[in-house]
Length: 93
Image (tube, rainbow, N blue to C red; front, side, top):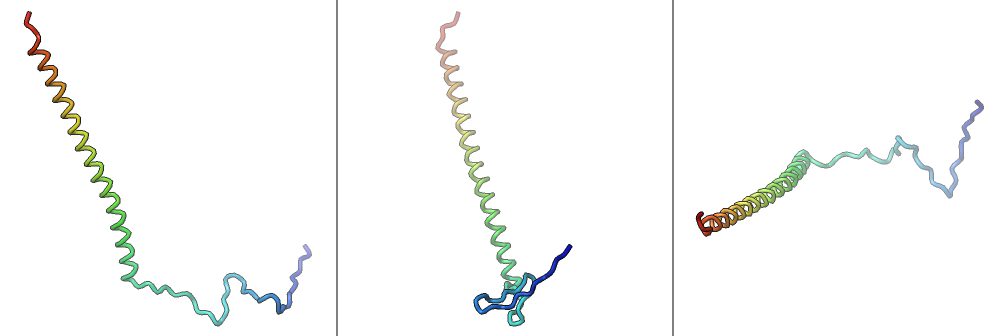
């Protein structure tokens, strides 16, 4: 293969860009300014948000379960009362 690399001379119209992976000598490396306490507080906050969402869903499910249980008990009581009325109100043979 005949391949060659051409070197372009910088022109005043186009600024010279740095190739990826290299940096200019005037810039400093990026340093994380988040302290251990900041990271710990962030994780704790996220854990509390996740926990509260799960707990809220469980509380709502519990409320629905209690409501349904009450409705079932009421329906059974009405059926029992209707059967009792039917049995006690019918003449004996």
